[in-house]
Length: 152
Image 1 (cartoon, rainbow, N blue to C red):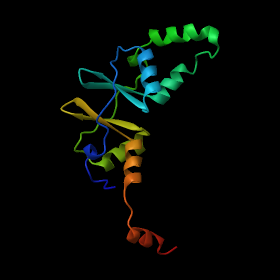
Image 2: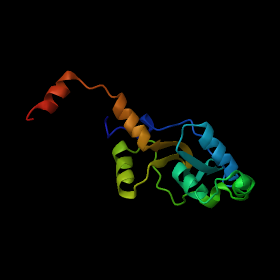
Image 3: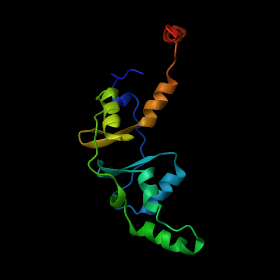
Image 4: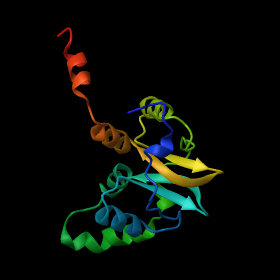
């Protein structure tokens, strides 16, 4: 992977987002029906925050697991909104920023997702999964393998 390539080359563009006012029942449904770990919280195309699956799991951790309290748990999900549990004050990158810039943001801040904005509007997201997938998809030549085995 060329870490000097622009973020737009590997970012996720087809996003599933929520509004800050959306109830957590919507967030729960999105996480259950989609294989994603981050939901951007957006108002008028501008990123306001992000909800990670971990954020959501920490929120519901206090819920009881018996069937009698299922109604209470659902009421809690309807009572809280996305903005109540979202992470605010996010680092952001532009589509032309280099991948190595995002890697630094991941390392320094221990983030796993960074919104990609252009003219202050959300156009994508880049995650640690995007980086790993790009590395896994990369073709390795026999010369690279031989070179890496030298000196062992």
